[in-house]
Image (cartoon, rainbow, N blue to C red; front, side, top):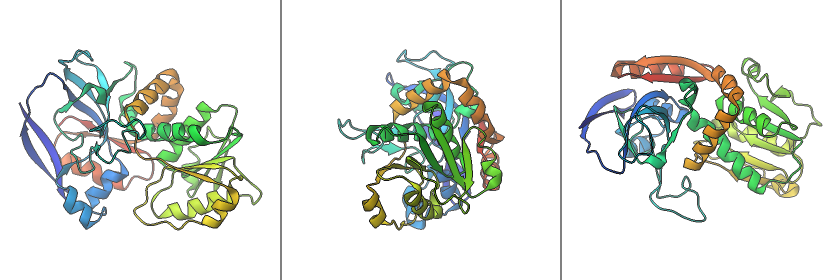
Length: 341
């Protein structure tokens, strides 16, 4: 069959390409239905990813957050019509020590490998996770982002000490919201404080114990452990504050992505014995764990609905561009594309 792929060929310019795809016995055919725009996609769309990366990775179909409907499954793993979340990580080997999302040989969709902006996806069954029938598909569209927090917490739990009375989360955006929400659910007896720049964003964090603007933190406040969800140019100042406001021997999970080198006060890290834990992306196991978490605690989904910033029905290439442009002007939440192209 001829499959249409909608690729970014240069900044703000999409084109359709056509590929002849064959049905194979080992792959499931999925029709994408709901896609979510990520900040990483926007860096490609706007050309701010850098000329070297743009020249190396384009043309490329964007989007690595999305769900779809099973149209054909010769493997018998899924019933036709089942909604599934699609795993963007594609491992090419197994390693008993290194997770699939950290293997240098793995591919990742919308990062040098075509993403989900296609008519149909041909995927191995282990790259798909079935969704509960009652799942809100607008929320499900950004499950990949939720898995980032779930994965980071699994890494945190493997190294952090057990004094977990007070967590600090730096970042008042989507990832900070998700991380804080899951921390409150996983550690119900612990307190979660959120530190951010924007008061109107912090007002969305009604479920945490305290919120603070980063220029107005009590001098004697200390957290047992911290999660950095800022990224970009703000990473440096966030990490500096985290070092100042964490207890000795704290564990700090770094989730924010920065395109720029970040200066770190190593002297205080050494004096306090702070452990920094880098986390990036996630694997199929994290998707299974996340779907199970959302199914077990549907109230999490209710809170996550507040992250739906806008929903755009996409039926043409022009609609794709409009969705990306309007996402750039959004001050809160995720932009969802209802994929009907």
